[in-house]
Length: 254
Image (cartoon, rainbow, N blue to C red; front, side, top):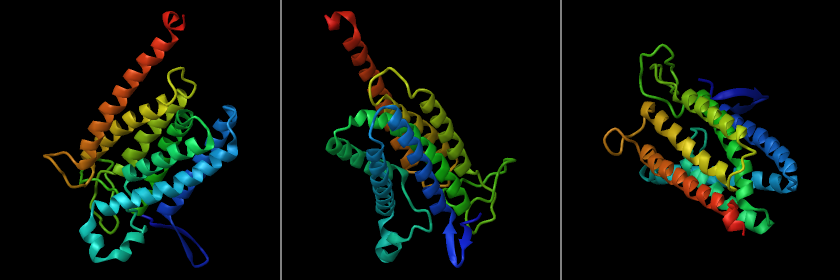
């Protein structure tokens, strides 16, 4: 593990924070390019990127703390300590989603069009940040004797499933799928629904190998939530696709 990636003088640059910054910069640049291609003001995309970054981190930390209130109740100062990588992706996603909706309404940009631009970038950013998790030694897997097992928990030499790598690779695959469909002719927002469905599937798979508490039998809270999101996302795709086809049919146009 390498929680401190390098130092500038006496200032340590943390691997997790660096991965967040790298993901933000790369995804923002790609988002601006896509906005220009769609004739959307790139300055508004820059503003949105900043809002999403801040709200995402706040929401991610808030949910992480709420899921472990007793620990933080006895030591409140730890709430603002992000060195342990204590962020809940679902919390960050929900917070960023709400801020994105509010921003699109205020800016007059179609929120579903923005969602189509953002969806592939969320997958790419998640892939990058999970490498930061690996270097930081958080989000580790169960002990394992597979050939590719790594000592991927900070302060522990036990060989484990490198679930950080699993999550990173799977999310990058999701990014490739979504990016390949960026010019889809389905309904606006299709890519975001597809992202939620595909991410939930990959999260369910990765959770099988993660060292996390099991809520019901062998299933973690994240897996149970993933099942709900998978069915919800693909049900929405099915319904909205049918409505879009009906609206485009000759009978409807007449």
